[in-house]
Length: 416
Ligand SMILES: *Cc1c(COP(=O)(O)O)cnc(C)c1O
Image (cartoon, rainbow, N blue to C red; front, side, top):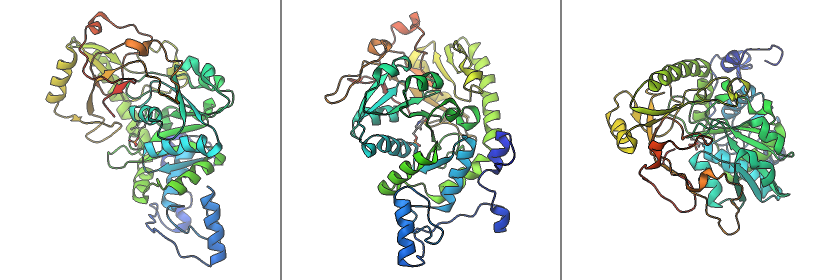
């Protein structure tokens, strides 16, 4: 489809399908083979070697084994890459598997030992980085402190915008400017490729929990990273070695779902905007968090092509009111996760958040944290989204709020 400049909505419908007519089919075929017949030892071995190093299968050697390559997964990857204006994409068994592979590929695999992470981040990502499990040292910092946090052995800068669950916005280009060539990954889950394309702003990678909007129907767990072909090779190598592959049935559903992503996003965003207006007028609601509200830096429009469909609210009645609300909803499912189109766009979750100064762990650094992390105990909130913007000082109603979750040393966000 490279010969025609197409609208993203059209790309979403057609990407990854250009060979279907020649195959004589209309729907994308699903290849469920776990293994593939080898033409002969030599060619099969060469193809294996190519894929084990992150490359493509060789035409004479075949796909060899589904941990190395699957054509149904490759179709979804091709489509997602096109939507993200990227050369390539690599799919994984979950968003966290994608994040794990990305960290390994940019640290251990290349002899670097340090990651800079801009907070706030999705709780699972924050936990993975903070756990030290992957062997990298992590400096958590504010988006303005990235340059100061860099070290000679920094292999990766991680950020998320809009952030889960806070909906905080980060200026991607401004972080890239501070990066001094260190690859920047943007968790683009909340925006989708239709509202934000981090690679166009200089980021090296755009990561999605495809479980959310891209899947859109609450029946697939998956992750995907859009990037250059060179980076894709490094990621595929880790995927082939560690085995966090996406099942082809999941890949088929994700590829199928891409076709409706534009109309889903339009409808969900329209619903969110209408809800924001209603909630802002509701006396029981103390505050509404949505990217288009209080966007003081003008990031919506410049970087993000719309507010998306996640909303967070803080209730006047605090935690008790939030708990009562989650127990009283009818159409909404009270559950974690987001981005669904069906029952739905209406997942409601109660988030109990306490922000504390990350405790320095031997062998890891937690410098450059904004002062807001030190003591600000935010009130319990109902989320479909976010915590208070960090540049906002606590309102009097927050000051005496009850602390419902505590942890030593790091922020606890009891939601997904
Ligand atoms: C859910 C989520 C993830 C993790 O993805 P899984 O598919 O659940 O592993 C990562 N980032 C964000 C922003 C998410 O919402």
